[in-house]
Length: 457
Ligand code: UDX
Ligand code: UDX
Image: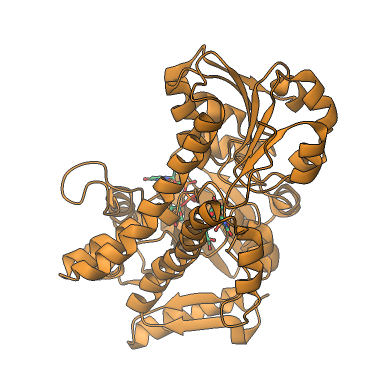
């Protein structure tokens, strides 16, 4: 009764939301999402979703059991599928050749072999995971190694959604990019994928290209975004030395329509599963082709990000009389940005670890990421507490460190918080999020990124 069977392998941050939105807009397609993790699949099926994305639970409940299904039975669903999206994770390699830079493609290769093993008919295989340029060709070779004459067409369709706004980004994307081979079967596969998105994405926003341009575009988009953040963060360091104000500079610069105002927010640095991984991947590819100057250029974006995190830690320690040993510090925010429970590469990790190494006692508060914080900081158990109540986190603390830009931190009663803290009480705002003038008036000494301190000492 369904026109086509779509399968997605990998029920993570990308696969889950993407398939939910496709299912919602394409009722005539049957969409199944499979994952090797029984726990993840059980969560998707329970309604208590494994990831937090505003608006996602509503969409899933609308379509689950109708044309959206979650399962762990990978093999039988591969056999039934016409189109297979693959969104398994591609972390940075931690071993062997290219360790610390290259993408680890073992899950991808394993998945390709599984597709090959379980398919008696030809299928379109869609790369959703971010992959190094020319992966499609390698995957194609594995898939074509069968002797039954089954034909697979590998198409690249990178996902540009950002966490916290996944549903909005999927519903209303800036563009959908689809790369396919310039052959007859490649173009036929491309039309099939275009057909899916045409259900809700305007034609002019569906961009097609060759496979390699598509794979590279995804890496480059993330590299450019990260580069903007690192660029503004270098200027924040200069602002601190010169008494210029980074917010004013970013505003003035961003009003130039050629530059644009987005991704110019200085802070404690970028996090998330993609930026660092994709830039390192880009530098690895450049090195592989002997383009060492190109590799060094992009590497700097990642190095500046670490530098910015270290700078923030130094700002805290220097202003707290060069010692935080034994002092309680409230950390507001642990996720890598607001509106997500994801802590991958979160700058809060580095900041907390550095403070714990200095023997501070941390009270960590985050609306969605406390479980992740607990796991990440397991080596320091006993030296930190997890607080669901921000007021309790700040009680008796010497300082508040803002590490994530959660909107709810702006509406707390900071006068009450100030009264409950040790004096002198500090705020270190790593996201330039709070109303600093007001905090200063309540009695806080306020230190921030790229802006003059409002210090009482
Ligand atoms: C993934 C990739 O990590 C990233 O490179 C790409 O840019 C987007 O897709 P994400 O969805 O955030 O990102 O990853 P994650 O949340 O880790 O989900 C991957 C899922 O794949 C996990 O649930 C994992 O259990 C599953 N998986 C992994 C499989 O089902 N099979 C495997 O062999 C490996
Ligand atoms: C990013 C890309 O935006 C998305 O297109 C891609 O598919 C995956 O990677 P994501 O990692 O979810 O998405 O978050 P993003 O909103 O891009 O933010 C990344 C990091 O940069 C966060 O830690 C954020 O706080 C930080 N950031 C962003 C800044 O510090 N300043 C800014 O101006 C913007």
